[in-house]
Length: 388
Image (cartoon, rainbow, N blue to C red; front, side):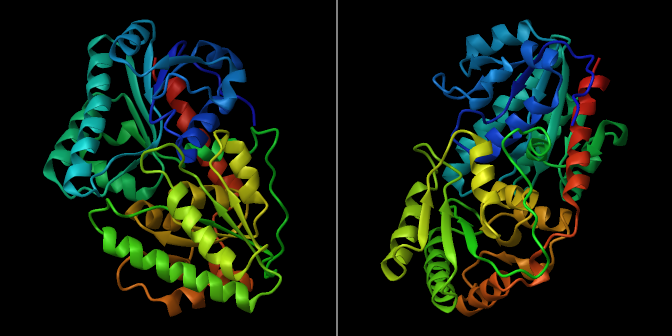
């Protein structure tokens, strides 16, 4: 996949980078791998952790620590502000967690406003918007969009959420930036997967829903307990099946390490030697290859679903957030393959879906061809041509 010729010369890229989240690092790596080498050398990326050294720094990208003074200094030396994709603007959080997230959203809106006041071009790329349950979130999102010269969204539902707030000529439906990793990576590959083949390796990615407004601690505990039991039964029924538990969110805040390790320990007691634990890795291409080695994925994390789709896995989504359902619709994943996380989710339903998943049921196969998704993801890069 060739780079896109750019008229932007010195972009400052902001997002949740350096936070030990595979999804964010995959979107950043995808974006950096797809632009021209010249633009990579002139780009600067704001990172949360000053010690964070992305494995893709061989692209010669300048790293800016997330402090106020370094970011303002970098903004003065740039000609464009780019907010990289993700679900930055939503409010599916309990009250205390929402207050922290509101401050997080406020930073992006404030930077976008300042960039516009300084005469810089502003672009939000590969965005996922919503759900919006609170008026302050809607107001803040609408305000931020007013400062944008270009907005691209990763799915139709996100466009629907903000369509009334953005002129149609300024918004485009593209695809998640992580799709740019496919075709630009030297390490990753797309395995050949014949239709109806039986699963030999099943990947699982979990996340907690304790802080979710629409779920909460009780749902979190109940669903994890039922899923663990369902996976145990699935392994008992399929003696040649192996399980791989993958951690996509590391660090020390809202990480997936604890919930994933509990699942691994629980299943290992009954099926010793048939379960692998894959800890968080800062290089998203390493995680991509781990997922590519699976035949099917049980994905709660949004980007576990994206990476599983990109590598041709059969998919079972555990939709802890509306964005997971939005992804399922965008890639043409049938309804049976997207299970909403709720207190009503029964173990028997999970056992049934897992049985069909590992036996090769094509109802767990996305219909959108991966090359079409990567082509759509390239549409995010048009912003670099249109911004000046």
